Amino acid sequence: MGFDENFCHAWQATVMADAAEIQNRKKLADMVGISEEVQRKMGAEFSQGTDHHPIMRVKKSAQKPDTYYIILRKEPYYRHVVEFKLDGTPITNKRTDGQEAETVCSYDDATATWTSTLKYIGLDTPPFVSVRKLVGDKVDVVDTCGDVKVTQTLGKVEPIASAEDDAL
Image 1 (cartoon, rainbow, N blue to C red):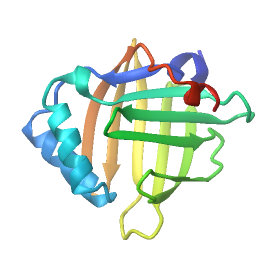
Image 2: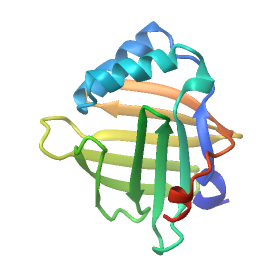
Image 3: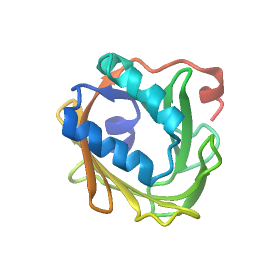
Image 4: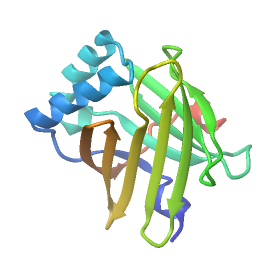
């Protein structure tokens, strides 16, 4: 199976992070410039269980060939759309707070591994690298920025329906 079959679904965390993992997530969020307010609100949601974690929906563009979107949302606190291609083409995306990052992605069909590298524009931050590997019906994720590493396992969930998302 290829990328579309393996990853074009909605995903959500399946396991609660322990204290060390939560501390690493905070360090990572600080490094990439996520505001304290958003971190505080999201932290309060995370502590309520995995069904309160953001949902990451991956979908193929209806309008642009070879283009995909990650739609990350946790209403009403956070919504972010990242456009990407799997051929290594760099694409600049902007978060809702205005922070820009250049995104470069690739996919290894033999290992069902999707790698994304984000270089934050205007921040003195090492590249943020996310490696997502399909293992059975779950996705193991390792996010790294400098010496900070965060891991999580995602499971499929029902996507959040949005006319705005469907227009992508």
